[in-house]
Figure 1 (spheres, one colour):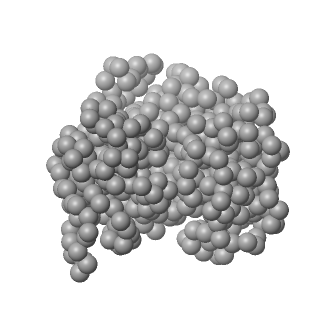
Figure 2 (spheres, rainbow, N blue to C red):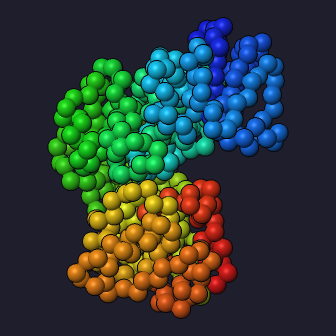
Length: 456
């Protein structure tokens, strides 16, 4: 397959646009395949080229600063990193010149790939599919948005290797090839700071199945109105498999609130005891994983046993322990309102909720209504998003029956939690906002919350 990629790269003048983790991965493989060719790397951030992040080999030109997007028309091939929005590329650039590591990888391995996307749940579902398949088959790899650029694993991929690929909207934005198995979990308002419109974000997500053919499989959440509407319009894959909590018909599986999964009203799996994957949203993730693994030949018993042995991922309804009689849960990954609502519903005994972060213009009306109708006693608001949520709460005629605590910094919340949260109840970080105002990632935010809990 490397020979095929080398043929694609050819003798072209190549620009690697964006030099984060995936950009460095692209450079490493491209340089290996065409060692004598001149490669240009462009990134707005000058620190991308610091020695600890970059070791130049062969002829290479580096471009940084505000002018990093100037002169793109002089390159034959532009390998764009997912962090750079597609609409940043000038309109005079031939679209056929612009590709990505995801698109190049799918060009080699689409028939072996299980692509999994969704606004929420894609990391958990991808990890679960990988866990189940690895327990039954020998050659399985996990790549993509989970933190492993696909090119980094290319030497471990053979003809029979099963590839689980977690795909973000950023990665899907610039593809013209879809994976053989496409899984679409849900679509909520998210990443409006990257995409020009919510519609553009939706279109990027739908790319996971847009370029499938009649032999491919599309596995989708039929309870999601946006996804169902798209399926009604028509999709190219003829093998459609749905998962649902409410629809009893269709070619797929249905779950119920008791944790039972059935196909055509015949019970497949009883998953009442799933401590590592609690809640309705995780049951939806499980059903998507079950559909994939059944189609790939994994028997029900093996699927059930693997699910029971699966450990949940950090920062996703992660139980951190009990401190000062308060149970702490870290759900830092929850950057949209829908995820927060599901978290509160799942845990049931949340007494203190921490909301807010970077404001990206997401609609918080549904979350505000949920909070006003619920029984939460304490809410801590942080960041610009927290300010806006609090403002929307106080704009309602119904005055909130909870204690509201606007704060400026994370470290301010420790005493508030200790003094106001009832013993035996839960303090939950589930922010409904991005972390990028104060932290480099949701993981860093979650670790900061853990320290606050431990310091009590």
